[in-house]
Length: 416
Ligand code: PLP
Image (cartoon, rainbow, N blue to C red; front, side, top):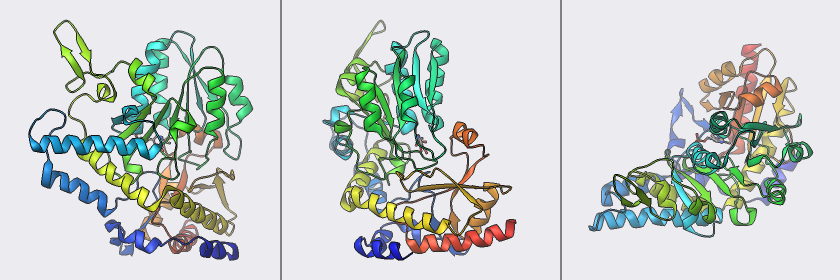
């Protein structure tokens, strides 16, 4: 407690000012002030994002890339500005490397279908890890089954860290892609993606990084990371749902063919043959999520105004604070205990189902996630049916964590 207090003093961050930017934090749940600790699932939205979406509809709602009229030009301008901001947010060299998707899941499916599947042959291998989200398993499983290829799964340790030696041993001449999460959504483990990419490069294997849980919480620089693909979701970076980003190196954007056809991606169409436009638009068939991109741009502005390093520092402080309090609950088993973690804590209790804990915490106005967190293979590894997960965002406070532990104590008393 002493250490936390002193680190709080060193690290000045006006969380109350931040909280005022999020209207939903005013609301009550079950007659209690909302304490939102389900940020790994989705985060709340600041007023600036809500305003950007509403202004699009109030002031310049129109389709993009098609019209010569003023509203269409304005909408196109804002849509393409969002692409430029997305590139800057993750350190891409150019907006030409940014494809707008529906989210992380959609981005992984796109890479699986457009990049990997055409290169995949019988007996080839796809390397994943034990801690992947289902979204970074199933798209690969689908193409592997279609092409008679094999998934190879890198193991993790009891503390939830990737076992690098074992990971390296899985790589062979048959490996066609390595797809790894940057940060585990269930445990918070931050993977050493630079090392993974270094090993992959030595073997000329492309790497996809699932950034769903890193983009919202830390400064990301895809150019220096040197990954081939990086995917994340708008709704986890304080932006809207239904929009996401796939970063792909320009050479891959040029070499991949779209797997979905439609308007907006073509250069010429006859009944015999279609030629496509160059660049990311080739992968954005149909009317895109214009309001989503515009809201996402406002979210990038918002995160930048706070600073990604500040966000990481604040959430790390919350993580340490919460971890220190768990010492008072010896009956709780924390899933994922490595030092190198983002602001996520999953825990399990023998003979108490996480759904019961989550349901009772909700009576205190506390939102946590319960279940398998779309990581069933990881749950099987730890031999638990599910966990209760608290995950932090920019607006969470140590007072909320105190309140959480007070409520947890009462809940556990009720359930035992
Ligand atoms: N990957 C990870 C690590 C995640 O945490 C999530 C969502 O929780 C996803 C992928 C899927 O993201 P979405 O549902 O936004 O496509």
